[in-house]
Image 1 (cartoon, rainbow, N blue to C red):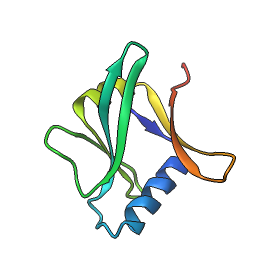
Image 2: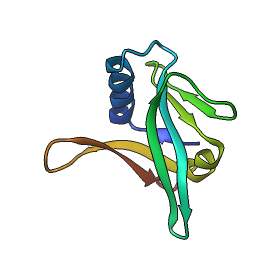
Image 3: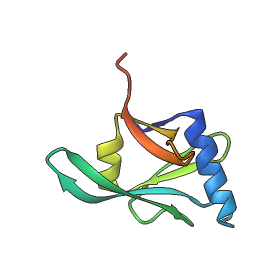
Image 4: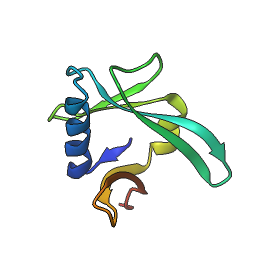
Length: 99
């Protein structure tokens, strides 16, 4: 199952709150394109899950919706937030540590 760092949970909560969404909103991952190296993911703030989405929630209320293909691709990954050279926050998907 996709894991989330505390920073990612905070960023998701902030994104869904600033978008004026109610408590049902979340961050939705969908596969845009599959390649030999993996998958290109589309990321969006969604008012709720779509049919067939896997719904992940945290105690703080952050919600993530995973389209079926995205759920399979992200099953052993960790969602994090990293800051780039310009100070912008970007979501990053990394392999979960073994063990």
